[in-house]
Amino acid sequence: MIALKDFNVLLIRLFLGYLFTSSGLCKLTEGHFGQLIGPPLLIQQLTPHGLRTFGFFIATSQVIVGALVMSQRYSLLGLIMLVPMNLGILTVTISQNWQGTPYVDAVFTLLNLAALLYEWHSLKFLVLPEQTSLLFPPKTNVFFPEWKMPTLGILFFVVACILSRFSAVMTSSIATMAYGLMYVNVFGNESVKLLQRLVLGMSFVAIMTFTWVGLFHKSLPFNPMIAIGFAVLGTMASYLILIIGTMVGNYKMSQK
Image (cartoon, rainbow, N blue to C red):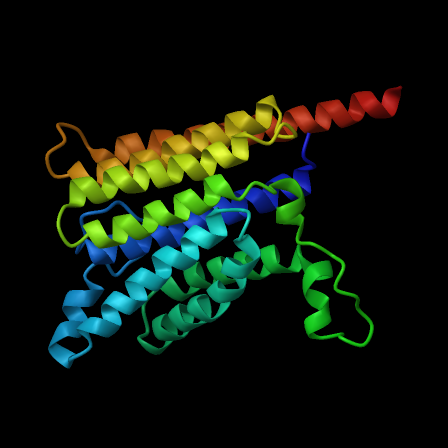
């Protein structure tokens, strides 16, 4: 089984990857893609100021960087690129005096930095070049060496960016396949055991719920927050089961 610390960082990478791919696709579809952070109409808001192209650049960059973070194989590159993006977002929310938002963005930034510190042995040559050899591969590459599946997932996200200008349904469909490929890549690791797969499976259900409920929320016969709430609670409950199971397993090992 992947150690709990390693699994927690895996969840951080998946979360940050989803957070930014969905945010970028939501902007590109002008709000017709489920996501957690806005503003969904950024491109429209920038257009009167002659910054429409810049808006597309921001949204597309979010998708590409998020896809790299989610890929595992190229996560370290994505996490490095995500730092200035997170700091830029945090600075904007503070300068605009948005209530509460800076605290949320600060949490995302801290998660980003924590995921990078996890790879300290691979990155410390940047600050300690005279004391460090370049023989430490990123842990993500040790756990997830496969490159074909995540690369294909990144390409699907690129296709989703292109389709976003034509059809929100097609964009969501291609993005669903991209998310699926990223999760298949993770599930393909035999070190990921049953309880961890349960958590990952519920997190994928939550992602799909956000994606599709966000697209059809106006036409649903029920409050979409109910479906989203169940998906999030299911993920949290499965993670709690994992924690309890890990504690029980460690206790039994210590009694032998």
